[in-house]
Image 1: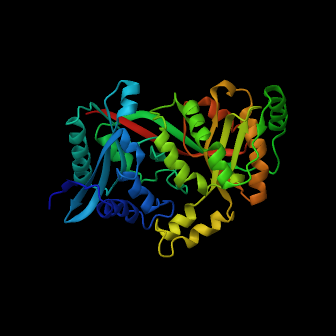
Image 2: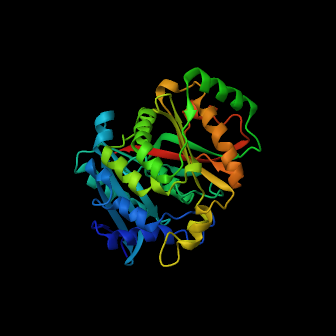
Image 3: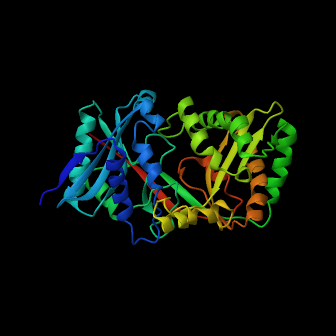
Length: 376
């Protein structure tokens, strides 16, 4: 029977089927970490995701013999296209069985949707913005994934390259051992930086204080820090409000380090969370009725892996040692909780400033992921 590709209506019930297909495809894989189903569905719903203020998107599913065999979301980020002068069609939230006919039909449908809207290049995997998962795994299939990244089978890039896509950019990831003590050089640099620039670690006593006092400042700093990075989509005020409301309140103050100047202006931020990888594997992306129970262990601070979500330093203070001040504060906190390892999560292979901050830690590069491009 031939493959049939159809657009998915922007309804929760229909999008949930597409998301669930992606999870079921990996049901026997010990390294895959499913997303929270409700979060991924909300990301694809225009009424839930503020990125739809400047993005257009359409999800497609491919069916063979009446059963879903693949899914893809075609995205046009108008802000990024205006910033770069390109007419890029992004693809993301993509999963498929190892079937040439399914893959070709799925990508052809998405490509035609983009051509009808004047796009000239096909690029991905990318999400709506940098807050979404991006980059196809090309190394590290035998490593535990994280809730912040994409896991895929080795046949994914084989099909992508067969269709004529070529490398656009790579991200690398590191697994680091949390040291027993703060590296001596970090201690020296941290003391110098504090005195020279009148910097200090913000004293945050509660989640409410974090949100009210520094919530918007964190996203303003992220915009300033990440502005020149590949494909960056600046966080809008409405997006910032959404992330503050939905996510910032979930973060424990001890997993966040904020560096401020003498006037309490934010100049550096380090945000981490306990790894939810094993919990999500157990609940298969479902919180209800009992899927929230496995999440309690990492939420209570139990576990040996911490995920480093982001490290950002204001451009004025970059290459001046502020990163050392961040880790001088975070390392003792990690040791107190009992974390043994830290996941860097994706960082651009060309970002030498980020690479340098890990040089004093025992580490190994254990994953690599790629964004592909080809003309439409």
